[in-house]
View 1: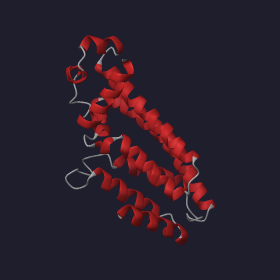
View 2: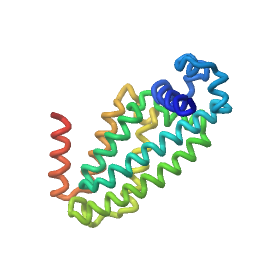
View 3: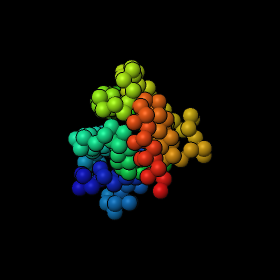
Length: 201
């Protein structure tokens, strides 16, 4: 039951937002009593915390699995983007922004963890791309990995990127292409163009 509550709550938080979903909504949606929820999670903050960290580890493990396939680094980034977006439901409710606003401590913890995971993964991706000759060999690897994280995080700010102007999938596509075009060699550009063209078909 605990897992069922966790999964349903995560689903609702991502779709409707952390602020909007109440314990009553969750109980009604699941056809259980609020008492049942409180027997597993002492309050909403605790539930939000567990949902966020559970999703974080699920995404992190999924990324590790994609990396273990040893695809070429450009393909790998597109696979990771596809996987994350599939499980984050296109983030229609700007959950990251809501987390920052209503659960700032949890947001800071999550950001630190995301940075650790993403930094390692992007550094490895860049180094492999340089070795393979598809990324430029004169890159400042630390700078590129950090600016990539910083950009990816900023996309989630609706003040900077209003949903009326950009859809989330569109933003992710533009951002990844922007990142890669700045670091690829002519050989890397051929791979990138073929991925973009096949995604548009």
